[in-house]
Amino acid sequence: MSEGVKRGYSGYGKNPTLDIRNVPEALPKKMLVDLFSKEPGFIQVRIVQHMRRMVFVDYEEVRQATKVMDKHQGFLFPGIREGYPDDEELLSGLDIDYDKDD
Image (cartoon, rainbow, N blue to C red; front, side, top):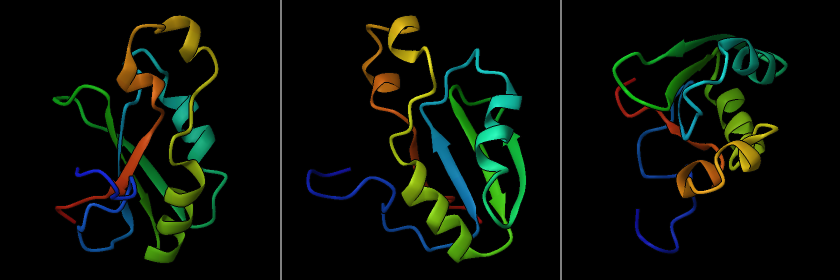
């Protein structure tokens, strides 16, 4: 992504599925569900088995997904700074965008 482009807005078409990266591999799925299920329109969290540090989160409507993306962009789970002090990617927080394939 080029400098000056806001994280989460890569140019993919808007859709209700979010592509979330920089998720710690050891993070329990329950923590993801707890974070994202509080938001209106939540459907599910899908772990991407073949991609490190990536999950999809589905919402009913694009506007709900957009609000979640804006609210949680850069979110750091508790303990990340202590558990991954040298991992710049994880320390930058969640990187959330619309799913490009939906």
